[in-house]
Image (tube, rainbow over all chains, first blue to last red; front, top):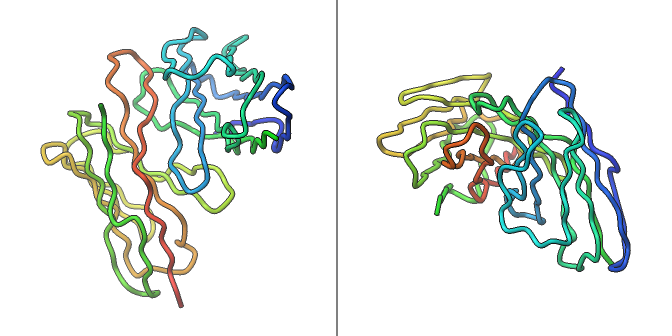
Length: 113
Length: 114
């Protein structure tokens, strides 16, 4: 099973709302990632969690707050977002050693009004 | 700063033809990944290339890696319409830790016409 699941699939939120994106994998992977992808652009790395600890933060604004409650779950908490944050948010996971591919979830398509 | 450059960025080709997509990168990494993305969908892993000279083939697609030239190629043989998609190459970061995020090329938007 090489499945990464993400919920919700679509999300519309106002700039004053607080929402969370959820990602789950049951492949025993110890590294999990958040990427942001704007239309017709490549994915851009946001955060990396390695063994449930934040190891890389690509200078992401604090209105995005990641959380890794356990080795299978990864959340992205959203607060006071801007319209330019509208994008496809992709979660991925991999073996920590990085010798295998990163498996991507289906993504959450976010629209900020 | 890690840079990954793909070319061409857009490719329209006829079914049955052969073509190659090129991916140049700026680090000494020996790990390179190819992904496919269909419109409105997520990324599907195609190939993982882990050493100099690595060559992998799946169906009509073949990928290779030359770490000395910092170049990877994705070759399409006898293209069929189902291969129409955006293809990304990606290179792992060099933080030195166990897990690194990927830096992607801009992608090659491939259209295969009957």
